[in-house]
Amino acid sequence: MSEAQSITGEQSIARELTAFQNNILVILAKEPMYGLAIKRELEDYYGTEVNHGRLYPNLDELVDLGLVEKSELDKRTNQYSLTDDGYDAVLDGITWSLSKVVTGDDRADEIREIVDESY
Image 1: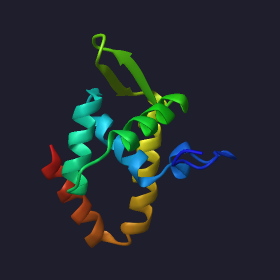
Image 2 (image 1 turned 180 degrees about the vertical axis):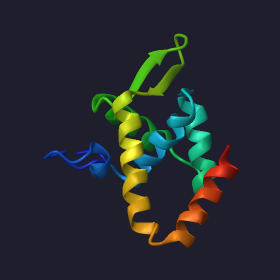
Image 3 (image 1 turned 90 degrees about the vertical axis):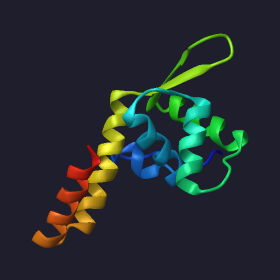
């Protein structure tokens, strides 16, 4: 079986994905990208090389789960984009994280500052 575990129940698919797969979704939330651009973003985040043998099977699984759409840019290059379900999965993960982190007004203000600085 791949990195993701089997998906059961009514919980969001994002809750069953690995951190690596969720990071791919977050990267694609910005804009559609081709595989090597996703690889570079992941390498910047992790600070180490990401093997093709890890990246592409995970991208394929995200496509199979309906979270990512794969299209052909040219005969050698595929582009990946987030589907509506993929975007919902990203939001679900953010919502869950915030529900644990934001425990009062001070922390809520810190999160607002991060959001304001991000765009």
